[in-house]
Image (cartoon, rainbow, N blue to C red; front, side, top):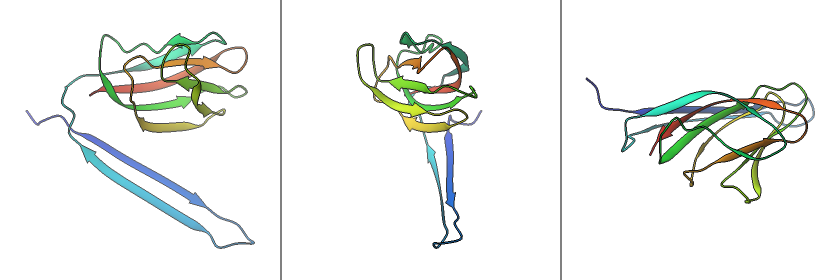
Length: 120
């Protein structure tokens, strides 16, 4: 059986008729110290709630996407902490987490957040 490995590819491009276009992509391969992951879709309301980690106590990599068509998904490091990531409708992000208790909420009504967390 192969060792656990995390592969991340990120790309961003910008084009405009009035200025020079630009595009960048980055790839990285990382070896986690743990061997577990958890993911799914969680409904977020305007009240901050812990993101379900499926029993993983120490996470590091997170990928998340706001599935809502209208409202923002708000992510924060812990209960009572300030929002650190705002995902507008349809937006996604990949980031290394510095907390083992991430929280999420919606800017209004509810949003569905699709995500995967990988053990540190």
